[in-house]
Amino acid sequence: MSPVPRLSLNRPLLVVDVVGMREVDLVDAPRMAAFAGSGRHGPLRTICPAVTCSVQASILTGTLPREHGIVGNGWYFRDLAQVFFWRQSNALVQRKAIYDYAVESDPSFVCAKMFWWFNMYSSAAMSITPRPQYFANGLKLPGLYGEPRSFVVELERELGAFPLFEFWGPAAGIASSRWITSATLKALERRPQLCLAYLPHLDYDHQRHGPDDRRSRQAVRDVDHEVGRLIDAASALGYDIVILSEYGIEAVNQAVYLNRVLRERGLLRVQETAHGEVLDPGASDAFAVCDHQVAHITVRRETQLGLVRAILAETPGVGRILDADGKREFGLDHERSGELVALAERGSWFAYPYWFDEARRPDFAPTVDIHRKPGYDPVELFLDPTLRWPKLRIAKRLLQKKLGFRYLMDVIGTDTSLVKGSHGLLPERAECGPLFLASAGFKLPDEVSVLNLLFD
Image (tube, rainbow, N blue to C red; front, side, top):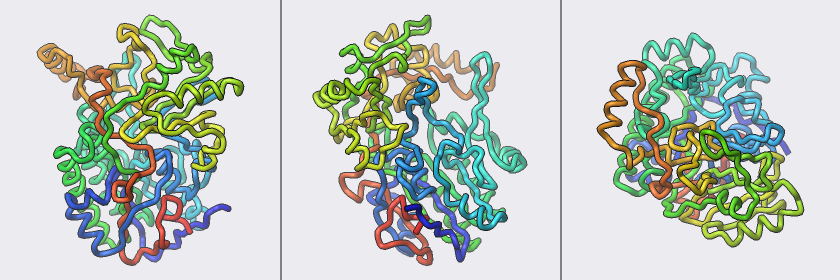
């Protein structure tokens, strides 16, 4: 049964997505804690996979992945025989969003979608999303895509260029969330009926160091300051406010290489190229699309399902394997899902590498390249500790002088032991999972989930 839109709002609404925020983090977040005390707050029931694109799609459509089709941050596009992550077209979402229903009933309805995913070509009247500029010579520069274009130009004029290289990669930090906060303040000045803001800051240090490291605690304080700016401005303008997170990040100590396991058994194939070994998914009998603590396993032949399942079951770090019944249980029974879905054990996560010899790794492996890698790579958050720093400093100065680059993109390594935090599973304890905080006047059901936060 399709959800019924709730957005017959008495007051305009600001929804702030503070990625990775947990109830236990409120002790280091005085602004959010004070806001929680003035209204209603509690655990937010989420979905598995608890990853950004899937959870955001469920919040905005009120449906599970079996209906909206966003089974992860990326998946295997079978008709193209390619794995793609972090696509941005809203047409990939196969169910209407809350603002779609609102615009249908009132064409003057304005939604400002500030960096939430699938932000291109939607019915949101105002939108901003990162859109890097890729040059033929390999140069990558910051860029934004948004509507109306005049709004994008205004933001770049008043706030400066979006700090793309602090949005993801080894330099990722508070600068990007601060820019998004300032941009959202500008959007609120235009009084949209619904404003959606995405602050990714906690993702960075919580994955780098684990969620309870002192540096991660400081990250909570830093993002809390930005959320406080939004609370103050939205309250002054008469907005209801909902603050939420998509998942809680948990400590991990083991990377699991499913693709290497499948390759050892002769099921995964690669192309030998001049720039290293490249996964050949169309020719593989089985391979894994790794996405934090969840992996979609494509199995080309039904007769091999039992074999592949048995191989995965004996792989250390694999906690559960979902077949057709298991996928239905989790709402993942969609054609974009793998024939099998693997869930990691607590403390483990799935790494995408499929090569055995570092000399044959593909040339994109030591780069920040979220589009060519056939899986999510949190090692992009780290500089390669084996780099010779004097050489790196010279190269950085040359690039800054000639190209205006902020830093080199090919300076990460492939050491997965650096990663100390991950997500994707349902939380083991509610206080370590996602949460919601809401204004006292905003009506919510007794038990709040990503499916009913904006829908009845």
